[in-house]
Length: 302
Length: 180
Image 1 (cartoon, each protein chain N blue to C red):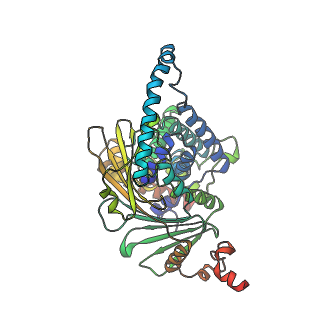
Image 2: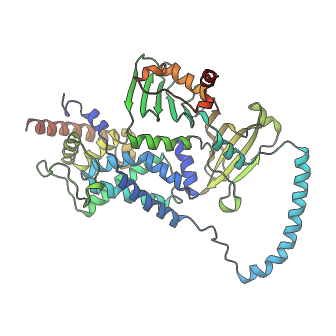
Image 3: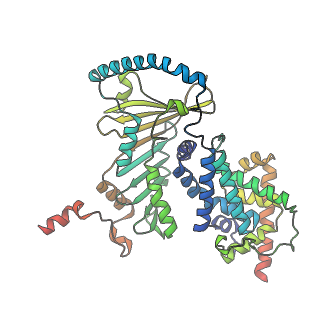
C-alpha cells in the first residue's frame, strides 16, 4: 500500500511539529505583544487638578460611609453563616491533588466528557463518548505512555509519548484544575462581580454547598457562572455556565461541570479497572507515591 | 470549547500562562495547515508567528462566534492567502513545483518533515489553491463541508466538487511520483 492508496488517511496523519527554538521565539514575541495590548494598571489614575481638590471632601463622606458599612457587615457576619470568597475557592483548587470533572452541555444523563487528573500521580485520563462507545485515553507522564481503550474492545493500545509531549501534558495538568475563569474579582477593572445567590434554597440543590454567582461582561455580552461551593472544603462541586448576548437579554444555559475530588487510591483503582493491573505495562515501573503514603511499606519496616 | 473560553477570559486579563496554553494546544495544527498550503517550512513558521503575535495583540478586541481553533485556523488561511497575493503566486501547472523546500535562513527553525510528508506536500502544491484549501481544511482542520462553504462564501456542492477533484488529481500525481 502506498501514499496514493489511502490518501485521506495519509493527509490526516501528516503532522508538522514546531521546534523548541521556534516556540521560544513565537512565545517571547507574543508575550511582548500581550503586554503592549494590556492596559496599564495605573491607566486612568492620572488625576486632574479638580479631582485632587475635590477628592479630600469626597473622602470624608466616603470614609464615614465605609466605616458604617464595615460595622454593619461585621455585625451581620457574626450572625450569618460564613461567606466564601472567590479567592478562597481558587486557592482550594490550587491545593487539590486529584480531580474528576464531568462536563454536560444539556440535560443529558451522560457527560460529554470526563477528565481525571492527579497532581501526585502525574496522570491525566479522558473519557469521551458514552455507553458502549466510550473511549478512555490515559496519559501516564512518569512512564511516558499514552494508553487508549475502547470500552467495547478488550485490547488496549499503547504508544510512547515524546519528551516534549510529556512536558506539555505535565503543564496541562494545572490547567485542568483551573475550573474558574479567574482568581479575583475587580468590578472597577473589568466589571466582574461575585455574590452569594439569595435564598438558601439555591444551595440546597447540591447538599453541603453554598451557591455563588460570578458575572463579568465582555464587549456588550455577559457571562455568568453559578458555582456551588462546598461549605467545608471551599472546593467547587458544580459550576453552571450561562451567557447572554446583550445586557437586556436573558441568560442562557451553556454547560455544566460537576467536580469530584477522588483520592489517589481511587484513581489508581479506576485506571486498573480500565487498563488492567500495573504488571501489564511490560516492565514499566508502576505508580508509586512517596514512601510515607504507602502503608504496606511501613508495615514491612515494622 | 469551554476550556478555550476559560483560557480566553484569563488571557484578556493579561495572563501569560493562558497564552502559553493556547499556543501549546494549537501550534502543531496551525503549523501543519500552514505547511500544507505553503509547502515551505520557513514561510509556514513565519505565518504561525505572525498569526499568533497578532492574536496576542488583539485578544481584547476579538469576538469569538465559533471555536477558538476555527478562529486560529481561519487566521492562518487568511495569512496564507495574503502571502500568495503579495508573492503574486498563481495557480501552478503540474510541472512547475518541486518538492517542499525551505527558504528559512537558519536550519534549526525548520520544522521536521519526513520523506512521505515531502511527497505529500509536494503533490498538494501542484493543485489549484482552492482545492488545496478545501482538502487541508477538511482533513487537517476537521472542518465540515458546510463550514468550509460558509467560510469561503460558496455552495456546499462546490466545496464537495473541489474536494473530490482535488483528491483525484492528488492520487494521479502521487501515482506518477511512485512510478518514477
